[in-house]
Image (spheres, rainbow, N blue to C red):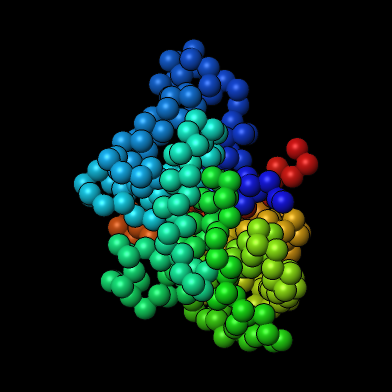
Length: 316
């Protein structure tokens, strides 16, 4: 079985960046001189904050989104597991705590293999279970959290069966909105690809291995601009649209990275990601923060930093 840590694809940039920080960044003398907190301080404060949001008085493993809410959410409970895993903090769990956390996550799985949070779905934009941010998106987080906790989803991913028939996956890929909504397509494809990889590696679903090869082969030869290494037809001369192209690419590249398959045109990808850096040092171009575009955003930052980290540290 694959090391559970390799499945932290969505948050790997955090771990990778932390591993590359200079040693002096954890030095108290340097911290005092610069006023910057040490990595140890950041870690401790993060873990303290996470613990403050745990819902006490019941089974372990239920986390709130913020201090202002009273009910747990499945997303919050998965992020708590993944962050604590990245900080090597899950070993402190008692056996009963780990089992209760796993049980809480497992209790939200539907018969088709996908996970559902009653606190979220059925309202707002989740009502129609969109492919880019619905149950597929949530399920990718839950299976990652389960892997962090040393467990596997109890039910098979039956919803993937519709992608395994001859030609079905290629037809689904071609039907995506590659021209105008490639950043949304990035989420759609990553969700299906991640669950194919999971069913293949953790649930031993052999047909998913062929489907995953088909997906990456198709991606390598369709809707990509070799000059930039990016997919989609948005205006590359417009900084905001170019940022959306890079955001889409980030989601696709994760599938290549996880399967240890070389990404097409890596040098051009690095150039493209560097193009999104703004004058303040972040990578925001206003896609998620139009009022103050150079104040950046979490999505825009990680979508450039993650591939830059991976592609510029290979072999070092």
